[in-house]
Length: 341
Image (cartoon, rainbow, N blue to C red; front, side):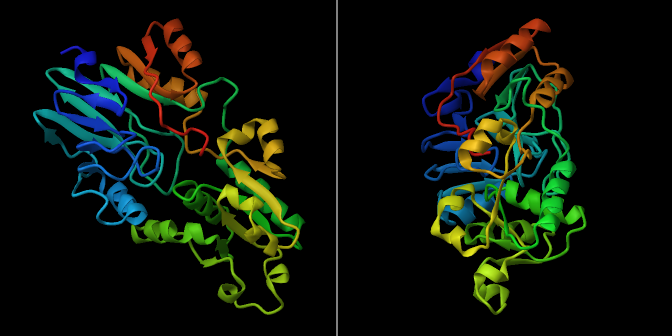
């Protein structure tokens, strides 16, 4: 079977005609294979959902247990046959439960990475290269300028700032699923054992991570009532770390903190103008996506006959593939948000 006969782009997403299912569809469909729990990949309204147990739990937490009439959880490596097509999940290293979809039929194997990264992350299973005929890869940071630094160095910068400014609160913008929990784990690994405070939007998913065995240490909501200190919020959170959605920097919520240091953990903080536009005082280059070196190393490790690029900076990655003798093309799929990193 030719790869184009096994998977092809449709308006709703990447479609397998032989199995009659979509991978990460952007609109409600009858049968959906979901690579991970971020909202641009895992949407409510499908009739049948196949996902890892952790992703299924994330979808239930976000959308309610009744978000789909049928939800099938498949462990990593477990083969599921859908109308004769074999589907299994391999770890993607992106967030808790994230997986690559390995699709095989009539001698053709296509691997859809979903979002992924290669560097160590204590909050999820590490990426596993899977040899294949076609690699369908993301390309969020597919430009040579994007080479992410060591996470530990970025967290050391944060903790040095906390020590240098004990009278100020450090508000750290991080997305609620994956980035927040990974950042907390990195802070703990650096030896910080004090309570870390959370915006209310972070609480449910942090509890879900802990229910799946990811230890995050002492956490509390960033309210005066929760931290139990007298003297009002302005003094209560001096010298503390508060994890919050990036959008909360401009909310009234952030006004309760004393002269806050606005920090933002994202691969986009590599671009100084982006940090400046957001008013970020302490940019932290911490990403849950593969950078340029990881993307190219993965293609070399997998050694596919062809690379299809789903979303992101596809031109540069396609050009690199051509230079090393690998056929590549963009799929021009729409509906995936590479800004929310």
